[in-house]
Length: 256
Image (cartoon, rainbow, N blue to C red; front, side, top):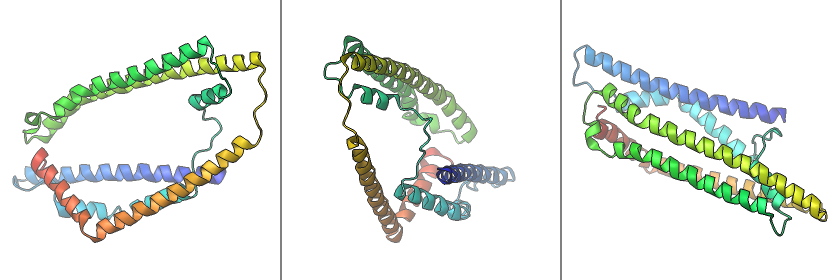
């Protein structure tokens, strides 16, 4: 268990390091481009293909290491097995598994959970809608001043995204409380009915078979993904995608 936790810690730290280095590289490229413009090179582009490739090439070893660790964790089924993590939905399903006729309290809590789930999704969609409408207006991105465009973008999008995230958190918290109440009602009903004990060993064997099946599926999907990535690199699709991305940034949004 300790080796598993060390492996997960290294994988998480490497992922955070890659994110920090990528962000720092983007900021450094922008600062260098703006310095050239301030020096009088107005037509000099802020981002160029050569500069981006130079920054990304230095991160290739870390990226390959992170990809290797991810592949190893998927094949070896290395994941967080901490017993402190609770899953209220699994506990509720397990408690309600042997009950043929749910009680009125259980039915009421189940309806409450459905309403909270739909309320959270619908509310989050309504909150994201103004942000999506802002992104669909081309006039908001016609200015060549990147700072003004990004400032207005964050001002019009971040509050709505924060509201959607907060609404989802509140509704999910209420739904978890409802699941816990339903679990307690199911346990009380099972005790009152004094139902027979479940069959020992069968559930454990089923879980082991499911884990083996999932491990094989993950390995097959990982090999297929690696093969497709290698095929795309060899036939030149990666260069085409990179050129299209550069054109979008330099022509559509106006970063160049």
